[in-house]
Amino acid sequence: MSCRRALFLGRFQPFHNGHLEALKWILEREPEVVLAIGSAQYSHSFRNPFTVGERLEMIQAVLRAENLADRVMVSVVPDTDNEHSLWVRLVVSWSPCFDKVYTNDPLSQLLFREEGFQVEGIPFHEREVLEGTRIRKLMAEGGDWEKYVHPRVAEIIKRIRGDARIAELYRLSPA
Image 1 (cartoon, helix red, strand yellow):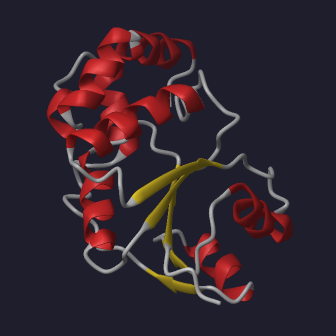
Image 2: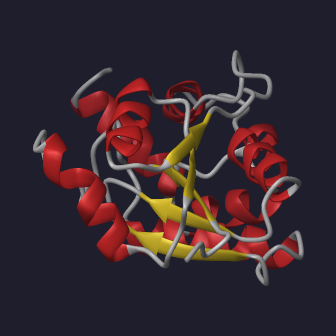
């Protein structure tokens, strides 16, 4: 039996306007979406600076502000550290039911297709500027990062001093 729900998986470090546009694009096509926060166990590195709790807070704030909370369920999924054959089963067991996957990651596309899921890509929205690595680098260098995230995300990042954390992480280990 089909559950008529799609999966949108990402690290969301941070949840930025490109992610929001992708989510809205998926919601134009699907009745409900499971937004799965991947790499849930990682934080306090330049690639993964925010905790899963901080990312949950950012995403929930945006979903409420954009009136999307009734159509989006959020789950958290840890990585399997290169045990790719196990990863899809982990995502399935840690998430509400879904029968379609939206991702642009080629390995994720392959793994989900091998497990029988329908997989579709997502059009990139201003990818040259709406990209997590670039936004984190702007934070690290004191640049104008706020315009690339929802105002609620910016408020949370400032409250937790996430921009200062990223600047310090960048100084400790430049990416």
